[in-house]
Image (cartoon, rainbow, N blue to C red):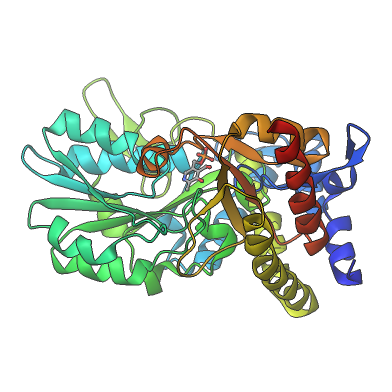
Length: 410
Ligand code: PLP
């Protein structure tokens, strides 16, 4: 293995473990990533020393924890090029961020007879909240279809979005197909009709450069745990004018200015949307997590990762297709190293279980995208999702192991 990749892997302790006596080959990164040392150390340091509730007390521990929490907000702002810190709302994850918008934005702006347009490659987190909001408002939910090769039919946005469309909710990168959607183009089309745009960036934040001002999206949602941060952290980016017009999502401590029994006034952004004690340790972990994400695309680490990813993308699709009856999904356009497939005559969960015994962690089943499974007429798929710390060697081991597993299952 390349010495630089070895260094990268050493920085992520979970990767060097064995499962069932075999070296772990972790290929379920789209579900959650493994954490680098600096994230683990920050979380341990806060839990063991700097555990004080944020924004509340005058004592040292609270001040230090608040400082780390707010530094992480600034780090996120910088990472996605948001104009101000107030545009960054900490949530518990992408799901919570999308639900915040579906609840608060839709309460304010979505009325009877309006519509919301979503992408056909969406995760359930970007389907169900809009369904609930549309049902409440008496609005219509419309879907941009996905073609046979997994391409989102962006040209259909023009006919689906009309003057009554309040919001278009799209996936930056699909968790099933691994295709990078052209967010700039979608945003332009939606804005031309007066609709706002939310981007589900749960996978995008990991594999793409995110510049929310360049994309001109109105909202961008992601989870911390997929981008090397602690579980229980997430971010909603929103444009200030919209966030200011939206009512609070939850009421409680620290989101208020003054409270009387007659009337409450709310704290300014971003705290208006952060009621109650946030998961401040997880949120603080986003600073070292994003430092790690940046290191993976910079300097000699960046060059080594890019080369290895290119080699995996060049090798694995053909190696998988050598297996008779295997169908690979999401084959068109710009791809990240994420490979979803089904194999005739084999159940996806059986494949995943047998790979697990060989030390390989993959995802199987509907992958929280049941409508997409229906689109391709399957009940489930197997997904191998690579992170920058994965290697070509692991891809070769996956292909060889899969051949053995399929032979045993038939
Ligand atoms: N959106 C996409 C594209 C995802 O891949 C996921 C998780 O897999 C989510 C949303 C939901 O993320 P979370 O469960 O961290 O809120």
